[in-house]
Amino acid sequence: MSPEPAAIREIVRLTLQPFYPLTQAKRLELTSVIGDDVPDQVVCDPVRLRQILANLIGNAIKYTDAGRIELGVTRQAETDSHLRLEFSVRDTGIDIPAKTQSSIFELFKQANDVSARDHYGSGLGLTIAAHLVGLMGGRIELASRPGQGSRFSFVLDLGKVADRDLMQHSTVTA
Image (cartoon, rainbow, N blue to C red; front, side, top):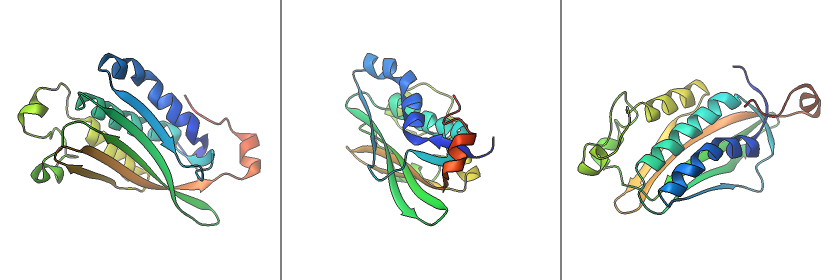
C-alpha cells in the first residue's frame, strides 16, 4: 500500500478492538495513551501500521499473565512536512534476558527460558513487526528489565495532512 491520510486514534482503536476478549479472558488491562499533541490525521500506511501494532500487542498478550499492556503514541519532533511519532507497547509480562535481546527480532528466535517455552506461537510476530517498521523507515527497539516486563518501541517519520488531502481520502483503511 502507499501512504495515505489516516486517523491515528482510529488506527489504535481498530487495532486494540479484537484483543479485548483475549485480555479479558486473562484478566489483563489493555489501554492506550495517545499524547494530546499527537494530531488526529497523518499520512502513513495504515495497513502496515496496524499490522505492526497488532503483532506487538499479540506478543505482549502471549507473554503477560498478570497486569497490563499499554499502547502509547507520543510526538517526538516536527518539521514543515513531517511528524516524528513514537509508538510503544509496554507490558508487565516476562522479561527478556539481556543475552537474548539482540536476536529477538530474528526469524523463529524466542527467549530460551522456561517461561517462554510455556507459551504458544510461531515466533514470527516480532520478525514481521521489525521488517515492516524497517520498510516504513524506522527501527524497532526493545527495553526489558527483570521483574518489570518489556517495552517495544519504534519511531516513524509520517507526513502531515494538508486540508485538501482530507477531502480526497478516507481516514482509515480497515
